[in-house]
Image (cartoon, rainbow, N blue to C red; front, side):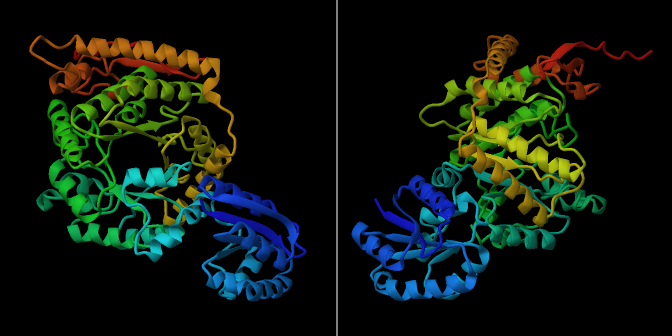
Length: 534
C-alpha cells in the first residue's frame, strides 16, 4: 500500500482541504498520515522519511507572496527526496496555487476548484497512466469500476453543424466534467444515413448534429481525444440498424448501444417499420452487440413514462427490456431509470417505481448477465425558468443517488428552453457533480421509507400480473412469449401495455386513462371509449 502524508506549511492553520484530500486518498487505497496545521518544512521532510512516503501533500492558504517564499524554501530542502522518487503535490487558494505551479517542483497544484472525482482520478494514477502511454479506461465497464465510488457522468450533446459540435466536444473533453458524450444526431442521420436520396435539406440539423459520412463521425471522435478522453456513444437509429452499428463501432468505438423494444418505428413516427417488424429487428441488433460483448441499454421504460403511462407499465417494460437483452445474448445490461416521468410524480413514488424496476429484474442477473444502473432526470420535467431548472437538476440528481447508480445521465438545465451549448453542458455537469459529492458524503437513505417500500411491493405484484397476461396471449407453438415479436406486439395492440399518448394510434389500443393520485403515483383510472365514425 502506498503512503501519502500531508500537512499545512509553516504558519498556515487551514486543514479542511488537506483532510478532504486524505479522505479521498484513503478511498483510492492509500495509507494516509495527517501531519496537522502549521508544520515546519523540516518536519514535513522528516516525517516523509520516517513513513517512507510515496506522495507528500503541502498546503498553504495565506498570503501568495509569503507562500511563494516558503514553498521555494521547502522545494530546496525537499529536492533530494524528489530526486529519490518521492512525489509532491500542493493545495491552496488559486493565487498561491498559481505561484506553486510556477516553481516547477510540484507534480500537481490543486486550487479547490477540482471536483472530488478529478482528485480521485489523480490519486488512482491518472498521471502515471498517461506517462506510460496508457489512457483513461476506454471501455464502459472498466471505467465504471475504475471510477467508483463515483458514478460515471454522461450527457447528450449535438449542435446544428459538425464544426460547432466538434469544437464543443473538444471543450467538454478539456473540462474533464464527464465520462461519456452521447452524440445527439439529427433524425435524418438516424433514419436515412445510407439513403441520401431520402434526405431532406429542410430537416438537416433538426434535433441534433447532421452527420452524413464516416469522416464526420471520425472527426467528432478525434475531437474527444483530449482531456479525460471521454467515451462516445449515439442513437441506434431507426433503419439500417446493423449497418449503423458497424459504422459506430468503426468510427466512434461506441461505448454502448441504446435500443428500444417497442419504439422508433411507425407507432411513434420515427421509423419506417411496423411494430412487430421493428421488435424483431431490435432483437437482432441486441444479438449483434451481444456477440461483440458491447454493453446494451434498453431505453424502453421511460418511453412509456414520457407518454404518461402508469407506473405499472413502466415496471413491466423494465422487466421485458432486461429479459429480452439477456435472451438475445447481452452480457452487460444498462438499466435505464428516468425519474420525473411523467412530471408530477412525488419523490417517494418515483423512488418506489425505480426500486420495483430494479427488484423485478434482479433475478435475471447471473453468470454472463450483469446489470448496471443508469439514472437520469426526466426529459419533460424541467421548468423553462433557467434558475428554477438548475435547482431541479441538483435536487433530481441528489435523489437519484439513493438508487446507487453506476452512471448518472445528466440532462442539461436548458432542456425546456434550448439545446445545451458546450458551456451550459459543463455547467450542468458541475451542478450534478456537486449533488453527487454531497450524497456520497453521507446521504440519508430515503428508500427505507415505509411508504416507498409499500408502493414498491404493490407495483411488483401488479407488474407480475401484467407479465402473466402477456404470457397468456401466446398459443402452444410459442416457446417463449416474452421474447416473441408477435406476442409482444399483441400486448400493445390489446392494451396490456398502453399509454394515453397512444390515443388513435393504429398500432396500439390508446384507451387507457392515467392520473397522478394523492400519493404522487401515476395510476390507471379507466379507459376511454373508442372513437367510432358516424
